[in-house]
Amino acid sequence: MSLREVIRSRVSTSKFASQWVNPQHLIDLLDVAVYAPNHKMRQPWRFIILEGEGKDGWVSAYLQTIKESDREDHKSVLMKVMSAPAVVIFVMKKNPILVDDLEDLQASAAVIQNFLLLLEEEKMGSFWKTPKYMESDKFKESLHIQSDELIVALVMVGYPALKMEPKLRKSARELTTIL
Ligand SMILES: Cc1cc2nc3c(=O)[nH]c(=O)nc-3n(C[C@H](O)[C@H](O)[C@H](O)COP(=O)(O)O)c2cc1C
Image (cartoon, rainbow, N blue to C red):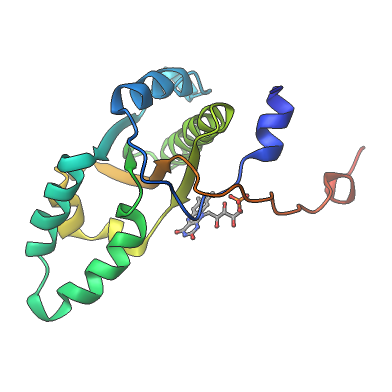
């Protein structure tokens, strides 16, 4: 597939097959994805991969930190993401200078898109998620996220159970001014 075809065919995968995803392979792809532009080569990112027994163990341990009366509701929301064979958590070091922080967020988003496209090239599926709970102290503590770090996104990864058609976009022709 050409890069153009990869970009055009990527979709958010809503249903994953149960097939195992090799975390070492995801690291190989992340090692390519990090060739994203980033200002002053700050490379503000790190990654956490949840998969297999490690993911299941983490889910159980994390849910124990949730008040019992809220646990079932929280579990059903959490499992919308954690049901994927693997979940890659993109973590960014916060920058105390606002302009730099925004740049670092943009660079982190570029890494995420690179990663999604690399997965698409291999006919793997992904879903970029930013659920509200990822900002909670309990969630961050359970993943050992430091106070100077931000969770940028949770990316669900696996093999798609069905191939979806891309959603049409507004034409850039209608959105572009040439001066
Ligand atoms: C920054 C960002 C955050 C997103 N967060 C969510 C989310 O929390 N939940 C969700 O269902 N989709 C989320 N999405 C995915 C979008 O809904 C999806 O990309 C959009 O509908 C276009 O569909 P496509 O990915 O199939 O092209 C997010 C996408 C981006 C770029």
